[in-house]
Image 1 (tube, rainbow, N blue to C red):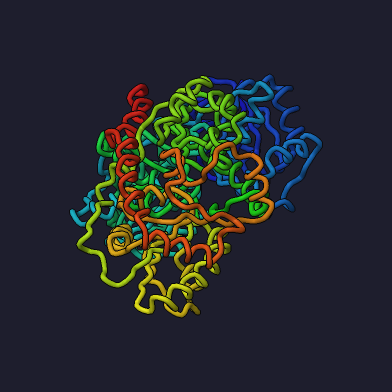
Image 2: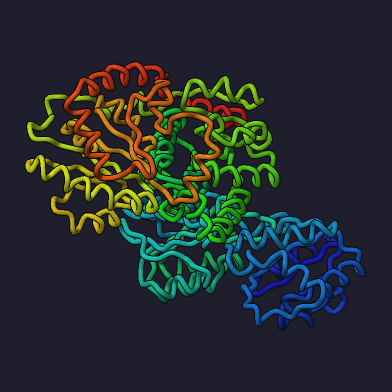
Length: 637
């Protein structure tokens, strides 16, 4: 027997009528107060309130129900709306976070899991309502104009993006503008907020069609007409049209157009980058993948570089930019919750490939949970965690939750393969980045220094006061000095606050080409340890490395670290090519003295000669990383 959960609207009636025509045995579970219980006197039925899970399971058991289907709208409840029995309390514990924090799709999937744990199969309503769908085409006398077709294409793109975020299914567009997006209040409320335009309603890319389907009816068409809309667009074979004949009649009566579109399923890659260096790598990777196959959809967590490459950003990395043991403790519950939400989104989105980039403390927790919950999703991690530097014990576990590890440094490949990790050296993108080209003719005659304090707020907290005093020491000896401070958009406002009271304000910029101009104009740089040091090496710009963090973080890392250097350039060179001023040695006076020494000695020429060799060792075909990831797409085609 089939159990039909009946919510509001006409959808339950369509399912019931279909079962009667097919002579299928069914019973009814009416959710909330319902005025239709009298219509089916000979059918087993029960009326339940949300939270009465025990009552539902007992009814299903008595009627020997092995399959259930959900039909109709159910308003997301408040806690005060629930009538919890004992089984309901148990279920509430499982559903707590998705019930009050996650989107509808995540909630419906969690409910499905509860039924499946009890041996009850959840089946799709699409099997019963094929006659309620419309195929691709225009089903109105009025046809969309050429200009309206452009609006429709915008609406489809935006509705799919909205769906990925598990917020809603509908978009209102007019001209080249999105007027409004559906929220938890639904499509009717969206229409009520607007006047004019085109409604575009599509299923979510990750939508579980067993649980939920887009629905329109006569009321939808009347509402559009009352708000002076020009037309409606729905998805072929996935949108239920209640009272189809009456809907089509009303569309023509009101002079609207009804277009039904087929949305071709795209291959999907979910990308997670935890900080700006990962955002740079992610943006480049997405662009390269699009050169191979321009029909891939990218979504996840990232920053401006990834967004510029055509990425649907579900959470800006500015919310993640922290570093250090002590700093993380203050945000541990936020990060834990974000990891949980990210994992749930990935499972719901069901990508062809999950790509996580750097930030192993954050991304490996995501990788591990995804691999545990859905092992069929291939996981590619880009940038090796520094297991060769510290936490070497982690290397032996990486193969358990990572299918492919793409590394940037040549020695990492053999090191990690010894631990059974499927590893590929894909080169460092900076080595083949044609934007970073040296141009000595651009160098200023006056002393010019580039300052690179880091891209995380915690790094700025420690480095900016030191650099301020350093700049004052430089100005005393070199009054004509000029400072550049290239940074990223996520922390640019914070940096501008820091430099408000500097005697000589540095030129702050966030554009990549302005960063390159700063490098070419400068005589030397002072840089926080990180990926940026490879940019300086590529440009042949002498520099000194600095780094400060909290006392606890520094002591812990110093105890764990197994290598003599922190600067990537020094690690690759195997010698202290670049001076490192760390923690207590990171003082304005030490930085000033070191900068003066480099500028007034042959050390700058030694650095430049070795920089070229180091950069050459990092260079391979720039498409290699994209090709490694695309292997998993190709295997699924």
